[in-house]
Amino acid sequence: MALPLPDDAPVKDETVADRLARRIAREGSIGVADYMAEANAHYYATRDPLGRSGDFITAPEISQMFGELIGVWLADLWLRAGKPEGTRYVELGPGRGTLAQDALRALRGTGLEPPLDLVEISPTLRRAQAERLPPARWHETMATVPGNGPLLVVANEFFDALPVRQHALGGGELRVRLEEGRFRRDAAEALVEDSPASIEAVGALARRLVAQGGAALIADYGHDRPGVGETLQAVAGHRYADPWEAPGTRDLTAHVDFSALAEAARSAGARVFGPVGQGDWLEAMGIQLRAASLAKAAPERTEEIAAARDRLTGPAQMGRLFKVVALVAPGWPQPAGF
Ligand code: SAH
Figure 1 (cartoon, rainbow, N blue to C red):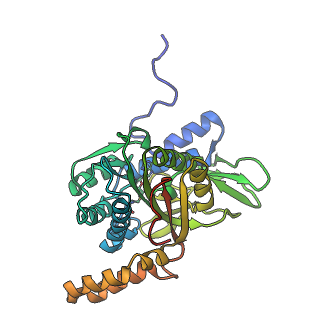
Figure 2 (figure 1 turned 90 degrees about the horizontal axis):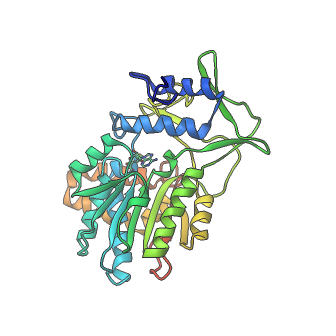
Figure 3 (figure 1 turned 90 degrees about the vertical axis):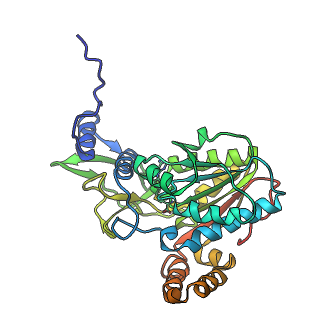
């Protein structure tokens, strides 16, 4: 009798490393993107990685000012677009839901309480989002976000978590193999990375904006122009770690290639603004004023607020490596801050 189970059916209590090793034993090797996708899916599904006790911290977890200024940016566009009916708030990879909470507060101030659509693969983080946010719908990708009205979209540190491929400069794709029980990526004198998953995601997003109206703010760390060299990295407990060890237990990310994202969005018909440094953008959006008014409301927290502002905007901190890019539907107003 043939067993009605595929060869790659999960084995009970198997770790991600076991599963990847089994797959490599079967197929000889796997691509870096497959390795990264499988490792991250498990990593995010099984923990809340954010914050001091986790593996890394993100801008919305540093200060409420970040989400608020994004909310102000979205609200300003929505108002100048003439307060279109049927507008939805969409967030890609919303983490703990902190950014959405802060942004939605700013939107409420202008009279907009949009339905929420959250693109999130992690069941653990979906639960965290449900605790903090008004009723929402969850999606695996943008494809199932309903409606044909304008979309106000936010993605912070989403694209850096999407899988990249690696190629030898001028040569073939680099593969991941097993050597004496360890994962080893093919050696190359120089390598380049690309991310078909990111191109697909930004293309899908841009097509929806072009068809329905709206705008997206994408914030992430990365470079303006594609470069040569490896940017894939692993972080665990706020320290760099080996990406080829213990997959699924550490966060794998790669620099976002903003020029590739911009090109994909433009070729789908969206208008693209930026990238600009996160520091410059937050300054242009009025982070100094916001910090001053928060400090006035809570004088005992003045130092903490100033430190958070510096961390978000300082060129040696998150101000320069992190960048902000906007996608805007044709016919929508010019976005603030660019
Ligand atoms: N935006 C949040 C979280 C960033 S961490 C913040 O700034 O704090 C990356 C987020 O993207 C997590 O919520 C993670 O679960 C989600 N994510 C990672 N890969 C994903 C994928 N392929 N599809 C949807 N969500 C994904």
